[in-house]
Length: 120
Image 1 (tube, one colour):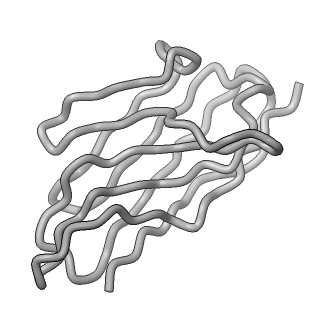
Image 2 (cartoon, rainbow, N blue to C red):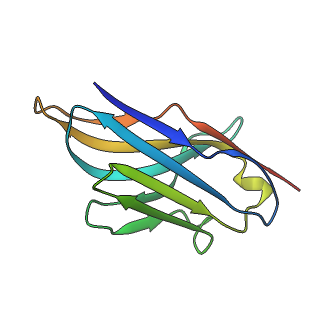
């Protein structure tokens, strides 16, 4: 009923940039907070960046000043611009959204994940 699909992962050298995109589709009445989480091999999933429906943002200390989260409410999309990438940014990046459906149900949804690999 609701699907999140991420785009834009890949392999980049340290110091490079990538832009991730996530599109939400389906029976969506409204989208509240959206965010990007990441999970490195052998580690727990952690929040990288989040944005409210009003545009307020929150970043993990490790990405502040390098990553920028934004959203397009008209298109039900969220983006993550990643600059000055470091090898430690290597992870699977997941899109997350707090969505209320037309049937009234409100729940958190996840994308399938996209791999970001930063080579040194």
